[in-house]
Length: 116
Image (cartoon, rainbow, N blue to C red):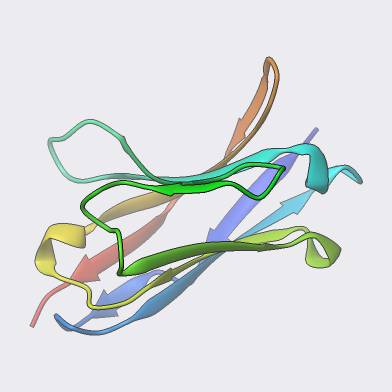
């Protein structure tokens, strides 16, 4: 069973940066999965933040373009989300997701709070 563990969240001031990590275990086929980061703010639906397909195609939500960067290290079974120029609107629980066909796996989430 694939398990995902996010880390790197925390409290940061507006304009600051954080790098989230999502480490996968229970699979030797990390590279075949499409990777994604989602977030869910209080009282709001979960929204897609960034995707990284197995072929390397990357997409971002308009709200984070130019500020966030998704990347992966297949050797470490880890996907990252570098977040720069953070604003209070980025406050949310951030989740990573791996998908391949009908299989999908979620992490438990990591809290990101942007506040002065």
